[in-house]
Every structure is written in C-alpha cells, then in structure tokens.
View 1 (tube, one colour):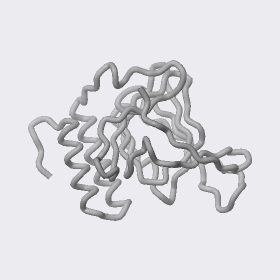
View 2 (cartoon, rainbow, N blue to C red):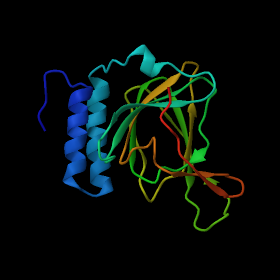
View 3 (spheres, one colour):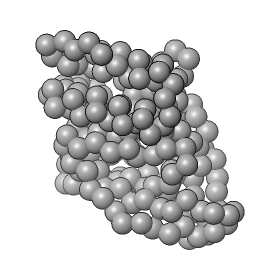
View 4 (cartoon, helix red, strand yellow):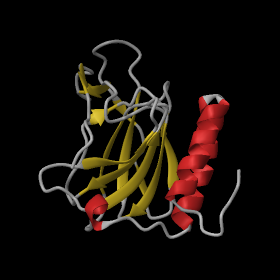
Length: 186
C-alpha cells in the first residue's frame, strides 16, 4: 500500500478499501485495519469540532466514510462524560482506535442459548492512540462508556454500514435479545 508523507484520513480510507477488497478472513482483515488505524492515530489525526462535539442526550456515531456498497464504514463515536451504550453486538467485524479521552469497555461472553444471562468478562480501558479489535462476527457482545472526565472520541471501522445494520441488544440479567439500528447521528 502506498504511503504519502503524511498519513491522513483519505489515505486510511483507501487502505481500508484495499484491505476489504482482498477478501481475507476476519482475523487477517481486522489485523491489517488495526495496523493502519494505529498509523492514522499516530499521524496526529485532526478532526473538526463538529465531528467530535458530544451530544448532551446520548452518545453519537458520525460517519467519516461509508463505502458505496456498504462494504465498510468509518465512524467517529463520541461519548460525553457519564454516557454509555446498551449491551450490544455488531453482526460484523470492527476495529476501534481512541482519538481522545478514555473508552471503558465491558465485554460479555456471547450466550450459548436464548435467554441465558450474560457473563461479564474483564473490562478494559482504552486511551489515546490505542487500538483494539472490538468485535468479530463470532465474538461480539460488549458495553462501552466514557471512562474519563472528558468526552471520549473514537474512530470505529466496521465491515458494514453500521448506521443501517440491524444489531442485537442484550439484557445482561435475562439474556433477552432485542434488535435495533443505531442510525448515524448529528
């Protein structure tokens, strides 16, 4: 993949497009996307105030890029202090890198059968410049919240248009599943 003197969002989008087009398995795809995302964050990625501004009522995902055939999407996810997601899945692979603030993630063991209470796994805190594979199609249940006293801003890359994809939400105590779409926010 060709590198420019400054690795920017445009070069990252092009690289992710090439990686996805290769059609490798999820493990290889997410590993390569994670490497490029580390490079993007290390380059000093600048995001506009409009993109990183938190909402007062809930966390928000703003699209930075959605591939025309929905083969992947890149989002700026913003949690204000005290905000969190429900326990949820993605139904696709995903890679997350932290731009600013701290993202506190609690993973859950994916239930083996319907209406099985979820088992929480050890939580992790992700800080600026850190990158993680947040999900694969087979391992995909977590809760994310702002873990700092400043808003958390993350760059999320998914193997689908995450703003239109039906996804699972879980009640961790009962294992009850409901479906939702998390539309792109303003």
